[in-house]
Image (tube, rainbow, N blue to C red; front, side):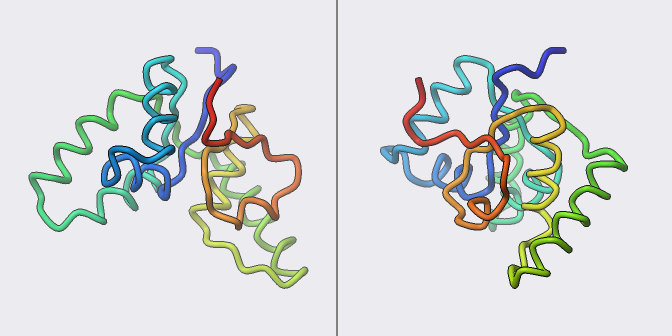
Length: 134
């Protein structure tokens, strides 16, 4: 499978997608889904599903999210995430592990990251997808 043009979507964007139907994030993600460009990793899936109080809601959301490209982080992705975390910590930034893994996997598969989380601004060389999708 080619990974050209794929976009790994962060939890904050998925949250807006499912809770704010008129948000720019929802509209942009709709376009990416229609273009079959959305990618997901397990830690993001778990974060999104954990946010629902009712099992039936979480199950419905999981069934929708299952339709996008799914990637498992490799051994090297986890090692690279740890190295990135150490590097950022050395300059005074403590970044959550999920975000480090997302960034490491995105770099490996040459995907963009769709997020509004400012932590990702600290990661050099990371391709970003903004809310305006072309």
